[in-house]
Image (cartoon, rainbow, N blue to C red; front, side, top):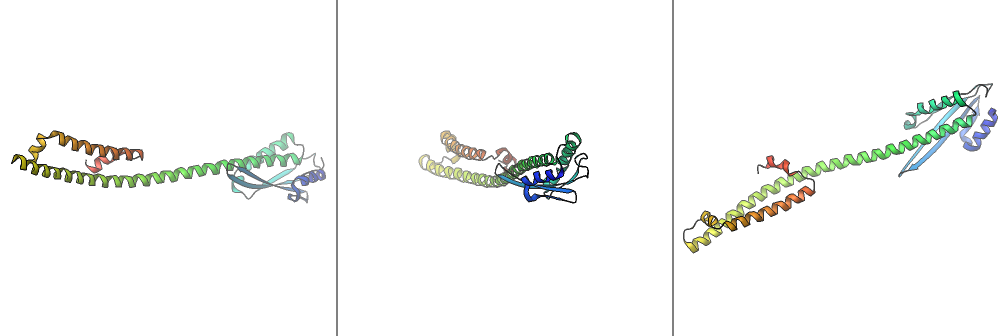
Length: 221
């Protein structure tokens, strides 16, 4: 196939993206890949230097692109085109078509990369939220536990005084300690009520991912 036919064939497909001047045939390939909610565009220009005795002597070429992600893989395209020229060259159209396929392949790889970046950033943000949540929960739990201990002591003391007063009225000089020693059922009931409330809170915190063991030493409970 002579060079004029080559130019006409490529122009029929790529239009004004093809030019031929001073024995240099230039063709710009523009492609778009729309996959997995990602739209990636890219372009590459291949410039063939046509020898005077073409096609008996094969052309040389250079590749140009403005996209960094294509430029990072341009050697892959160059190597592939060089192998075709050396081993099974037939026409320029075949080379351009091969470049086009490889550009599409690189665009698809870029789509995968962008989606992986989205997933990676989402995981980083999730871990950051978890760290913030755990820190807040730990502080809240510590405050709750301290308040709970105060309330428990106040409640027990109040009950002791009330029951002591009641027993003193009924039995004279029975002390609060004697009352509780003689009423183990009431003391056990108070303990069970407190334990039930603590278990509910602990269960809720565990569902939120809080490790209760990490509070044991800090709270001195």
